[in-house]
Each structure stands twice: as C-alpha cells, then as structure tokens.
Length: 167
Picture 1 (cartoon, rainbow, N blue to C red):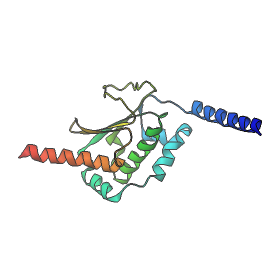
Picture 2 (cartoon, one colour):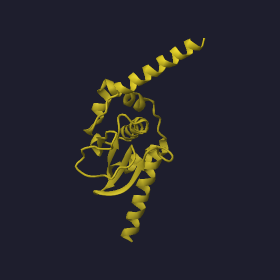
Picture 3 (cartoon, one colour):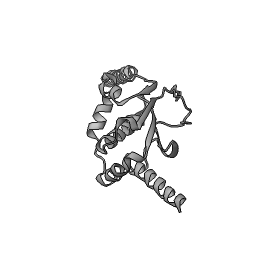
Picture 4 (cartoon, rainbow, N blue to C red):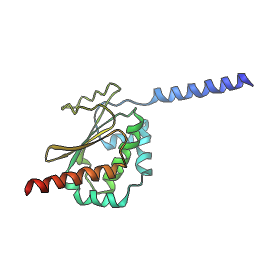
C-alpha cells in the first residue's frame, strides 16, 4: 500500500513538473491575439470567457474609457497574471474599449520585458493607468477588490483631481 502511494505521488509530481516546463515564457511586447491564439496560453482564453465583471463598475469604465490608456506588464508563467490579465481584457472588451488602449509587455522570471521605458515593476502583473501621458495609478498584483473596481477607483480619483485643478 505504501509503495502504491509513493508511485502515485511520484507520478503526480512528474506530471506537474512536465506541465510547468511546457509553459511558454513570453518576453517583450505582446498583444491579445497572441494570447488568444497560442496553444501555450489557453488559460487566457478560458479566463476571458469565464470572468464576470461587475456591471456598475463596467458602466463607469464605459463612460470614461476614452480618457485613459494602460500599460500592462505581466508574466505568462505567473499565476496572478494568469488570473488578472484575462479579467482586465474581459472588462475592456465588455466596456467597448479598443485594444489599442492597452500596451502589454511580457516579463521573464527576472521581470525583464525589453520595454522601451522602465516602468519600475516590482510585482506581476502591474497595470499602469495613464491619462494624457501621465501616470494616474497602478494595480499591482492581485486587485484589492476586482480589476473593474480598482480601475474605476483610479479613474474616479483622476477625474476628481482634474476638477480640483480647474478650480
């Protein structure tokens, strides 16, 4: 009985190691089509299709979508990126935002991306929200509430700051 358990355990360990090794580590600028169509990133397609964003937050993003763009630094090997990035894309797609609003860079395990700018990323994924070329906020790692709630909070703070500056 003990021998069977060890063999089963060894078999499970072997299969999970093989799975981890077969995961593709992308680096550099990537787009949604790459993630949607690559057989090594089926997690992206599944994540986009299964994520259900909050409608109220989504409506706020829809209303303010033309006011911002984003840079996303993620890792195709990183579990948190595999959860957050598909959710972000679902929010953006359902919010009617054009794909060009998001520039995405894949990072390797050393957080190297070959991006033309150093975005000072310390944790993956990092979603940086820009308005008129100026950083307005970041979602780093797992969102505090949800992708759409955290994004709405950044957009709201940005518009409140803009109103205050005009007064």
